[in-house]
Structure formats: structure tokens, C-alpha cells
Length: 287
Ligand code: A3P
Image (tube, rainbow, N blue to C red):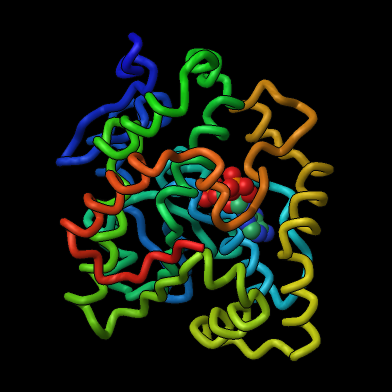
């Protein structure tokens, strides 16, 4: 299909889209997730894909473990792994691409801390395009031009649904639940001041690392350090989604503003208009 519709096999459910390849039966999967129980101390990192999920996850995991060791495995994605596997995760840090209304009820009732990281959607689109091309599924889109992909991104046809809906639902959740322990983090701000954000996240998690440890964590999470480590430690789960064995495809450039090398003025403005029309309460950072 030249429009790519067949390529991004998605399942529509409850007003949003899920990647068919990951989920199987969405209703069953969400029901199972909803039946799970959590601890008050569990922390969730939530994000639209390609917004810095792994970056944020690593900082949270280090702060929680009082260490400066990067993880060797991929984070446990709550909406991807079979429920049984998820239960075995011991450190209580979970990652999710779910909308707030699909989060397991128990996690919200227990007021588990949530960190939502968001990123300029133009860079998200570029990152997503480059990422998908390197996955096994990407074989199917190897000839797709960025123009076609971008059009699908802004018309909400990708298999992860709409970026605007995602970010809007999470920010609305916070507005409607002002007291809920949810922290919004902006990728571009974290890029500008990584050390400062390690402290912001530590305060939010109510942990008290030494200044020295926070310095080390910030150093380990700089793009160059982190991507070099990850390229040398490719988890099995990554090999299942990629044909590119010599690289960890989650770490590409880690830059702000790469979109300027990809989007035309018209494409950029088309996305701006859509965002303005939805009145997002967040500041979107364009470099
Ligand atoms: P790029 O493709 O623009 O490089 P996610 O983890 O949500 O899938 O997001 C992946 C994006 O975050 C990729 O963007 C990746 O390079 C970037 N990223 C990962 N680690 C990073 C870091 N330490 N600093 C900055 N960006 C990082």
C-alpha cells in the first residue's frame, strides 16, 4: 500500500491505536493489566515512543538503586510484555506507552509516581521514522519516503496513534488530578540541563543521592556515554525487533532540532497548526 496503511498494522481499540504486532488481543491484554496490583513505591515512566523513554528510565533506575550503573537489559514495557514476565521485575520501575485511561487501575489508586517525558513532535517523527526503518517490520517500509511517513504521523495513522492525543491526555490528567504525583519532563529542557534534571527527578522520587552520585548519573546519561555503553550491551529483546545486530537502534543522534534536516516549511507549519488547534498546555520547545 503506497500510503503505508497496511504497513503499520494497528488495532483500533477504545478510540486509539495499538501496534498489532505487539498486542495480539488488546481487550484481553488491557483487562489483564488492569487486574495487576502494584506497590505504592512503584514508579512509571510514560511517553509517546521516541520521546526519550529510555533516557528517563535510566535516570530513574539509577536514582532508585542509588547507583550509577546503566542497565544492560531493555526496560520492562508494561504494555508490551506478557503479564507474567512483568511480575518478575524487581526494581519497581516500569515503562509504558499507555494513555492514562489505560493504566492499570491499581497503579493509579495507589498513587504510584509517574514521570511523563515529552519531546518536540517534529523530532519525534524523525526519530520514529529512522527507528522503524531499522526494525524487522521496517523491511516493509524501506522504500517509504519521509513525506509519506510524516503525513501519516500528523494524521494519526501510525500504529501508536496520535502524538497530540497522547500528550494532551497526560497533561489533562494532571490538570484534573492536580495533587497526583505526576511529573512532566521536557526532552529539550533535559538536554539543556541534564544535571539539573537529575536533581528534579531525585526530588520528585523523594530520594537523597549525594551530589557526587548525581554528577556521575548525569555523566553516564549524556548521549555519547550512554549510546556507547548501549551499543556494547545489546539486550536479547532488541535482537528480536531489529536486523541490525551491531547497533542498539534506540540510540541514534540524541539531538534537539534534527527535524530541520527533514521537514519542509509546509510540513512544519501543518503540524504547528494542528498543535495550536488543540491548545496543548505545554510549552513545546523548538530550537
Ligand atoms: P533520536 O532518534 O533523535 O536520536 P525512546 O527511548 O523513547 O525510544 O526515544 C529514543 C530517542 O531518545 C532517540 O532519539 C535517542 O537517541 C534519544 N536518546 C536516548 N538516550 C538519550 C540520551 N542519553 N540523551 C539524549 N537523547 C537520548
